[in-house]
Image (cartoon, rainbow, N blue to C red; front, top):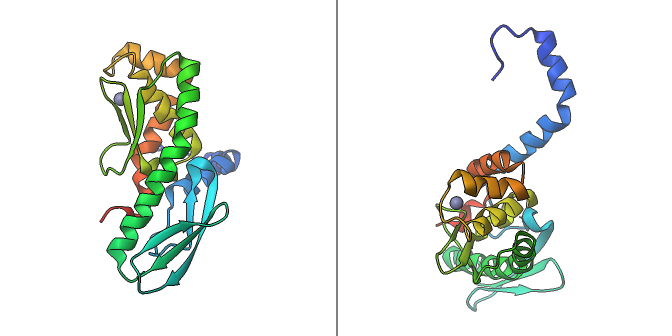
Length: 201
Ligand SMILES: [Zn+2]
């Protein structure tokens, strides 16, 4: 990490100059090692929301109920982890669907493009895609990313409505709306580590 022949003084000068940045990176790159299920809290960074989950175990099948704002109640057979996992992922997908729609349309309007349809999916391999028919798919796991990363991905997919490729003209279009796209694109490589491990079986 440190270039060879860098004096310790220079390193510590760098560190104190960039302390805030380093702290931010550290926070971002150090997700919890253990994701409890049921979770106590769902930190949806992309939306600036923190959902508190309360559990009430019972004998009925698992249900996720939305109480007042940013409170969830997990009910039923909570030791059936597979059902609990599926119910939570289902709720997250619905929540992302209704939360992503308006910002996606607003960004599209700014960029002069209009997606046909938004589809939120739970996928292990891609963050988003854009079909020839104008359907934009966004990964539910974007909920756990910083807001600027979600915004970048929306700009990326919306730009595909004009360019169905990753040509220089495509990237020029992206850069017009997000000059910092390179570092945000790199953030996505680490993004999987911010996603609760229980989302994927
Ligand atoms: Zn792309």
